[in-house]
Image (cartoon, rainbow, N blue to C red; front, side, top):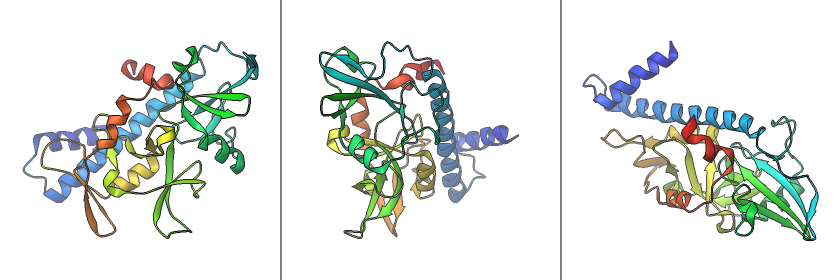
Length: 254
C-alpha cells in the first residue's frame, strides 16, 4: 500500500540508490520530510485527545491571591480554546479578531509560581491572568501574506489573513530533522520562535534544497528566484523553552 511505497522510497534515499536521479532524490526527501511532518501532526492529535484527560486542579474563573484565573489551550494549528472544552476543533475555538489580537499579543513565558510547569505561558488582562498550555508553541504561523503597509512578505499568526505578523525571512526557516516540523523566528515576547502550520510547511517544502548526505534537514530554500542557505539557528531556542503541554510529556511514549 501507500505506506509500503513510502518505505521503499525512504530506503532508496538512505541507500543512495544509483537508479535515483538527483532530481528524484530531492523529491523523495521532500516526500519523506512531509511524511514526518504529517505523522507528527497525528501524534499532536493524539496528544490533544489525551489532553482532554489532563488532570485539572482548577476551576475556570477561580480567584487566587486576588487574581482571577482562566486556563487556555493552543493547538498545532494555532487555534485557541478554553482548556476544559471537551471538543477542540474549529467550531469551538475562539474566532473574534479583537479578542484574539489582544490575547495573543500579550502572551509571554510564565516565569513565576508553581503553575509554570503545567502552564508555561500566560496572557495578562488587568487583574485577570490567563494561563496557557500548547501542543507545541503559542505562536503558529498560518500563512504568508503581503503587508499592506510595506508590500513585503510577512508570516501571519492569530489567523491566516494578517491579524498579527512578523517579517518573513526565508533564510531563517528551520526544520527539525527528527520531527520534520518547521519553525521561524517569532516576537521576542512570545519566546522568539514560532511553529509553521503543517499545511504551510508542506508548501514551503516544495522549495527546499537538500544536501548530498542522508539528512532530512534541507540545506537551502529557493524563494523568489533566489537561493537562501538555511542555518537552522532558531532551533536553539527550543532547548530554552519550558516543558510544553501534553505533547512534550507524551513524545517519548508515542
